[in-house]
Figure 1: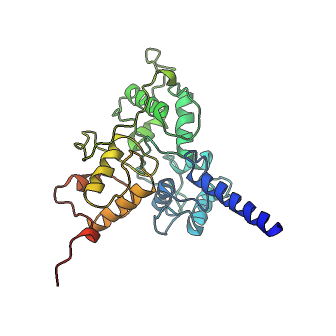
Figure 2: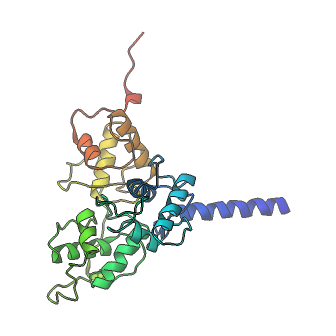
Figure 3: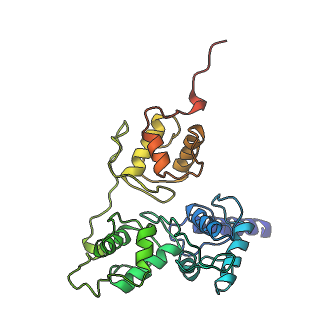
Length: 295
């Protein structure tokens, strides 16, 4: 009986752990997690000279030691956990590299709708201070955060795409900035007045490619662009699931297979190159489904 209870307890503990990892509300990034948010951390640590391993989205021992080394160099508690404080410093323009100097190049950060984690907390908190964000700071880049980013971009003369890229990030954390506080004429729609996010109907055949060019689509993203990607991958024989507009594990695996067959960077992310390849009429279909010649 004791063994049975222990087994049940272990299963429950494992289920809770998996639920925590798969949850959209990733407030911290730490050892044992995996995904696009880990890839971005690894890429930044690599740029700063702290991480020399493969950028694979797996938070293992190498990533842990790199995070601790970064924290020590930048005067943070070396706990190996990426929380809001470490995230803010990690992506800051004045972050110190492994040699104790400020890196001359801005990190090609891309944080948009569907993203989650401590870097989103940093963005939400900063936009709250500036008067653009009025919803809950939850680490989820949803409709309210996207609208706040767009409002910030309009007020500061940036491209209005709702994505926190290098230009938006640099201005957001610079000394020269327009906030709602110093621009009384600028208004922000409260979350209750924002248009709802609806899932598009799933047609039998791929719809026409959306005119909006995606900069980054990965785990957690959802909407019309993801739906198109799924439909196109299904047409090419890589995606066997039901197209639902949600970028989950099945979609990521299909993207990985497509990238491998089409000589693209294999990262499971639909960036500009993968997006262009998907729309190419000469895109390579799934080789595993190719007919074999008769003996």
